[in-house]
Length: 345
Image (cartoon, rainbow, N blue to C red; front, top):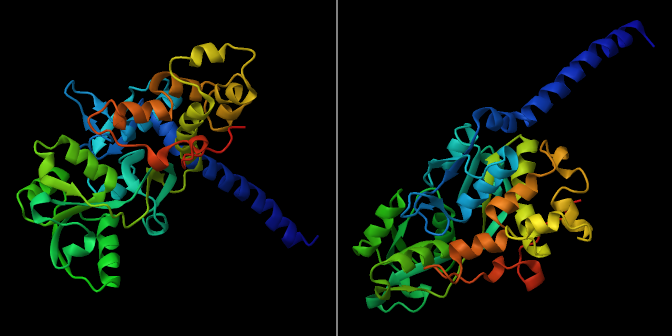
């Protein structure tokens, strides 16, 4: 070997080690920051019933809230160690990319453009949805094409704007918009008649309708014009943190699939005859937790303190709630739905 080549090799080894160490530090960054801070900073909408809202007892509730609670239970041992920061459709991704929040759990849609351009990574689908429309019953609107030339209330920075432009543009239809950033003000404008229709994720419209004082005055149209896979985002470049958030969600889905609930998790954990899949999920077999930088009880704590996906859905959106949103596509794959978690092994 030439002396110069050998010198390059010798110089390259420490440099390579430094780069590897730096990458490891970067990947562990959010996890270590969360542990040092003592809480998970969760960006939520704060005004979406069933997903993120403060109840009449002053507690944060909702599907998006419970995902953050499950991550806190997995990482910090306590589902209550979450700080909730309300974000808007306009500033939510900036807050995440800048490090102001650790998780964006705000019923945000997974799109190629967001992952490519906003400095964020998607974790997994937490709720399958689609863009729908609400109109005033008095207007007698029966289908979306009846709204040619109408005015729509929309939130800025959402997929709803682009979807509406695509749908109407392809059909040669025209429309006007009233764009308002804050959801309460947006829905208030719609109810006052500033626009003929309001468009958003179907679940969000149904949630708002269920809580209105005069729901009979409004109609949800049957058309759904888009696919809106909703879920949590994390800042780009942190594989460790992304894995933790993603697989915590998967653990809750797997819990439903295997029949593990917050009520029976202790019994199943101590059952020597429980299936291997349950043993791996609850950490009595395998080393999945340590592979993620956690201990072996991470999924056990999330299930014990927050419940499985079905329990979370039922208490936030199910038949016993004012919203009563059918699970539809959000059923487990075993019940012909789309909720399908990769194996925890």
